[in-house]
Length: 130
Image 1 (tube, rainbow, N blue to C red):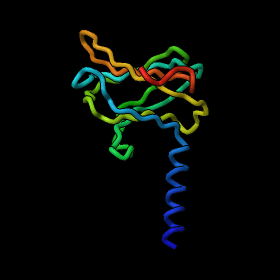
Image 2 (tube, rainbow, N blue to C red):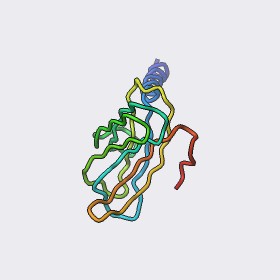
Image 3 (spheres, helix red, strand yellow):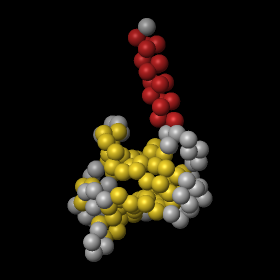
Image 4 (spheres, helix red, strand yellow):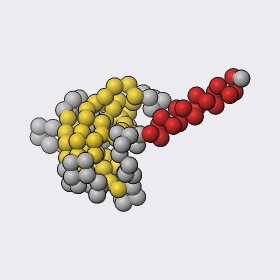
């Protein structure tokens, strides 16, 4: 009975994770902290609604960082809050989003902002390593 319950719980958790397109990464880059996260739509999809979330060590969602709306290919959206190097972040799309995407993370140092740029691409369109 315990095995059956464990299999059922694992199936529910897996189904929940598959319902969302969830991508995760650890903030690296040269700065100790960043004060802006910008998501850029480099895909061919329109009307992408997503959020960036803080993740725990087990990739569980701890809290949201910000919500982003990318209306057209080439569109970008930003939020400003401090994120320290070593922080685990995840990107989630809504369950209604049916596209398949990858992402590439880039770190930029501007005079007023240190930015984490998250480039959303069509799945397999680009190498995910910078």
